[in-house]
Length: 523
Ligand code: RAM
Image: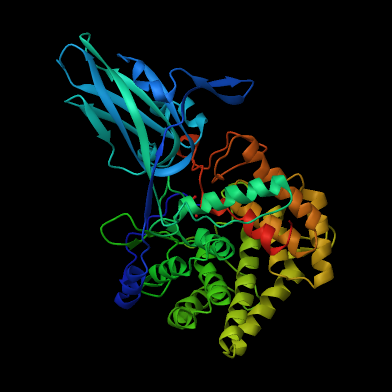
């Protein structure tokens, strides 16, 4: 089961003033830059293929189009931006005997503009749909919308003027916003043109999500999630090398734990003060340990790691309470594992493997710090590995089972946790490849990242590279300017939320190919 909303309103969070102050001191400067719309378009849908076609007027002649009630135009900014939008509006005809009402719809991909928001029946709030109705009492004016939007396309519909006058539009522009200076993007070159394109889009995707914190997606939820941060930080180390933004995010999480020290899955940063969400995901809490280990490996900032060490260790100590003597993890209902947005597959074996992997990261962290790991943790690790081999490994199929089910999540996470000896692990990945490829029923680039990593760690360079090209390359062939939150090649209309209108099409956890390409030298 995947999680929907968790409501834990009785959970209390303590606020560590020192940690939150350090987080505040590491708040990044935001860069702004103006960009102009490139063209007007219309959207064509033929045989399920979307096309954007140039439409009159040209942008330089935009004000030649006079718009009255019911007229609309779609502007294309030529690339994806996280930005503030503005446009000049003029009146034509008699004086205004009524206000002007406009509808503005912002879209990251053209497909969003083909869905009627009034038909939305997904389970996330419809308020995420980037659509505004504005009343304007005086013309001419420069309309500047106060909210930040994440988009490439904007559709502007005139809901009403009056029969006595109409309007024209002029100088649509955006002011982009990011903690990355877009004039100073890292250059990473690969010889393979497909991988080059994938690399560039990975970097663009991460850049757009690097705001005040590492946001998961600038369209929605616009917040800091621990599982996303785990991957964003790794990509950042190979690209932007912005250590202070990672540091800020680590201190934010550690600055707001529950009274027993548990880390929330995500932090709200859009409110007047930062707050931890009352949502808890087992794997996300644990990944704080991995984040800290990766941060130390890359930044050498021992001081931060020492500050946050006990918060990390505490996640393991909380998790171990759910491991029985024989090494079986019994996940509690109020601390579910996320793994992927798919609902259909059992996640218990994957969760067992996540804890094993994180225990290894913890030992590695201790080694880096020159700390001796207590014997207890080795005993725990051994018991969990033995349990996995004795009870979860099916001798017939030579693969791991999860509550009686054979699924891809279990194989991938058990492979990443190195539960089997090296040569057996390679065999496991070969079997996984035979059994589960082409991949089906995996909903997110987040989980695809781990599939590729498990292949590459086990010497399957050709298969790993092919999967990057097939999966992320397919998004590009479908028109992606930035990589998407959810994408199922076997179900193109898939949304974890019941409607693609609230899917995010610039989502940081999808930006990992550049890291995989660099780390495993796929160039
Ligand atoms: C969604 C977001 C986020 C993810 C969580 C679990 O709300 O996509 O990136 O971490 O789910």
